[in-house]
View (spheres, rainbow, N blue to C red):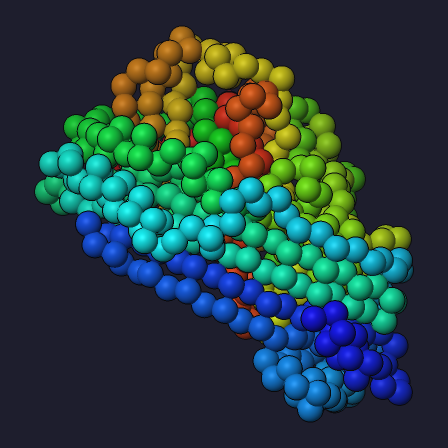
Amino acid sequence: MKKLALEALDSALRPGVTYADVRLIDSRERDLSTKNGKPSQVSSSESAGLGIRVLAEGCWGFAATDDLSKAGVKSAAALAVEIARASALAKKRDVVLAPEDKYEATWASPCQIDPFSVSVDEQLALLLGIDAELRRNSGVTLAQTSMVFHRERQIFASSLGSVIDQTRTASGAGFDVHSFRGDEIQKRSYPNSFGGQHQLKGYELIHELAMLDHAARVAEEAVALHSAMQCPEGRFDLIVDGSQLGLQVHESIGHPIELDRVLGSEANYAGMSFLTLDKLNKLRYGSEIVNAVCDARPEHGPGLGTFLFDDEGVPAQSADIIRNGQFVGYMTSRETAAAIGQARSNGTMRATGWSRSPLIRMTNVSLMPGEQTLDEVLGGVSNAIYMETNRSWSIDDKRYNFQFGCEIAWEIRDGKRGRMLKNPTYSGITTEFWNSCAAIANRDHWVLWGVPNCGKGQPEQVIGTGHGASPARFHDVKIGAAYAG
């Protein structure tokens, strides 16, 4: 593979080309799911191809191919150069890249059990067993389970002289149960909604999740929600569990710090950002205890945004985003870092696969753990509402006004969990919400959650991101209003 990548790079280095890089990718995926006791999906796929980026006459050109013959590679390289030169006819300014060093590296993410070495029959049997356990509860109308595995080997080569070989193995699994009664549907998921938990691990993740052990409880909660009290409407202290807070971070911190959104190149698809350049190092984003990082380094954890080098050959880094409540950083590329006068990219360029050009994407955008125990988070006020597991979300195109719905909630009285509440929602303004943060649980309760389906770009690129969070308490939050009492 390395020889082919270097041959493609040579083909791209034509007169007038000031920079070029190649990503040669070989990937494999397996998806399994069940629905009410029957297999719903059992599929596998493989893909191989390469993408070539060139910078010529001050403009980018990109082309990709799955024809890995010499003729196919040369044709893609010629097309990339042709696109760059055509783009130069309408350019407003030349692309300038922040400097970067040459690197040679080989890395593979930790994987104790190769998920593709476990038979489909064994994996499907586990899912069907969970499905059956869920449906033992007579109040369950729909039970669904899923597993997904992905392995990708990428060879990156650039005209800087970098040659980087990375292999990433990701696994994900989860289940959900629906209970229909009258005109109401209630749902519970484990270990998270929208496909469960996803991390950069092998099949050992499936063992860690112990899904069968939680099936009966989750089914019971879904059915019990029908008899629960409607979540009240008003302003309350709100305690948000770690999985829901991970999505809150994704939507109200992760997306607005993408510098290409700030500079306007994503406005036609995903909107822009309220975090305009004048707010850097000046905006009070959250309370003093709020600290957030963008961290792709393996030592941060097995997140879907973990790697050794991004898709521009920039090393993984930890970048402060919010420090003691102050907004201090964006996610950048070599181009956008140079555009705002920064000396170096912080390494957040990624592409879905070989057929797409890299974009600024969330790596692992995490809320750092606080110092409180969970009991202290729950017991800090006499009356609060605790919400768990996302059910729905809505946020404006600048990531400023939001509303989230959760699957389940409980009253918290004097630090103790009380009555179950159904149809809980909360809403707010991003900076007001984070400034109301009064307590964050410590690292004992911190989990690096995976969001496998973040979309961006045209054509759309769906990619996985990671978000570390532990339960946290927020003061005087608007709750309710999304459902009738």
